[in-house]
Structure formats: C-alpha cells, structure tokens
Image (cartoon, rainbow, N blue to C red; front, side):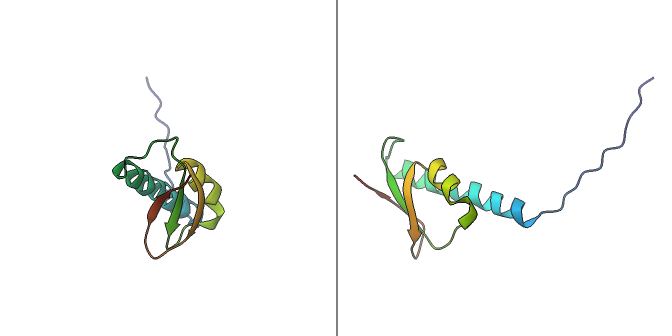
Length: 81
C-alpha cells in the first residue's frame, strides 16, 4: 500500500520573484541582441536600457558579459574595446 501525502503549491508571485523573472527576461533579450550582432562571449559590451531591477545589476552584467549598464530610450547592446 502506498501513502500519498498532500502537496500544497504556493503560486503567489512575490515582488522578489517578479524581479527575478524580469532579470531573466532582460538577460535573454540582451543575449539575443548580442547574437544578432555576431558578438561572442569575449566581446565586452555596454547595455542601454529604459529600466532594470537595480538590485540585480551585477547579475545582469555578469549574465550578459557586459561591463556597464546605463539609462537609454530602448534596449541596446554596444561593443566596447
């Protein structure tokens, strides 16, 4: 006989979870822009973006092989060096 325990799944989206999702989406978009521009991981870039979760800036930079991020009108990746 098998005992089946109940599982309760919490589906609440906390502000932190929402920011983490935004960060993953932003990094994915930046990586796509890098790919479209033919850049490799050794190519250092700067990011321009209208907004981003400031608490995750280091994660965005490391996840996108970028050296800096600044305010801009639209999401853009600029090769440096």
